[in-house]
Structure formats: structure tokens, C-alpha cells
Image 1 (spheres, rainbow, N blue to C red):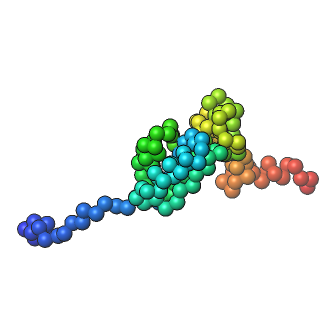
Image 2: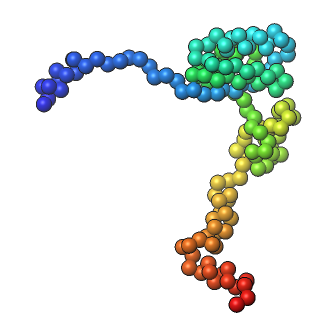
Image 3: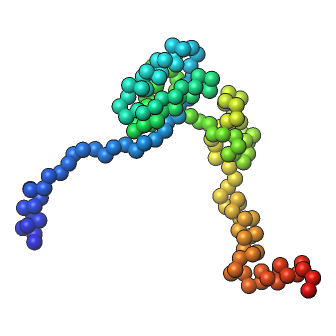
Length: 155
């Protein structure tokens, strides 16, 4: 079999096509003051290969690009317009447990948004502990669960 494998390596055709990038949405924070700035950023990103939609929200200083694109290339293209740009650093305020923790609250953030920082979320070990305790009270694996429940009811 060794000789056949050796010969078959010469006969096989390998494709050098690169895999297609996954469909994704990239959000970028860009300060835009006028219609010209907005148009320049939108045109720069729209001309990229793989871009499906571009949404510009000047009030929030936000550009949302959807398509088969590389996020770093989109950021580089926006920066090439001469504007200061960064990936969108905010998340909706209602998703955060501690929105006023140091580093999360940002006066420059759009209304209803806070910075995405680790301190705004509870630690993984402390958040699951109370929930696990309550769940184990009434599980089928706890043989004393019935006695705990039945103590409250008159017999």
C-alpha cells in the first residue's frame, strides 16, 4: 500500500481556494461631525469586498458593518479616512449587574449604554452558589426534600 499512496499523492488535485469568512457584524465607534464625515466613512467601508450592509448612526458615533469581512480590516479602513476609530466599547445598560462600578460608567457613552468591563459582572463562582443551594433543596436527588416541604403543612 505504501507505493500506491506515494503515487496517489501525485495524482490528487488540491484546491488552494481560501475558506470564506463567516458572516458577522462589526460595530465601530467613530466621531463624525458632519454629513461629509459620515459620507466619507460610509463610502470607505461600502467599497470593501464582502460588505453587505453599512449603517451609520452619527448621533451615537457608531458604524455597523455586516458581511463576510475581517473586523480588523474594517477598523483599518475606517481609520484610513483620518478619523479616530475603535471597536464599539459599549453594551446596553440593562445587561450589566453593576452599571456604576468604576470603569463601567462613561459620561461620553450614548444614552442607555455603559462600557463593557469585567467588574460590571458578578464573579462566576459567587453568582452560581446561591442558585445551586436553592435548586438542591427541591431536587429529586435530595432524600430529605419531602421532609423539608412537609414540615410547613399541617397533617
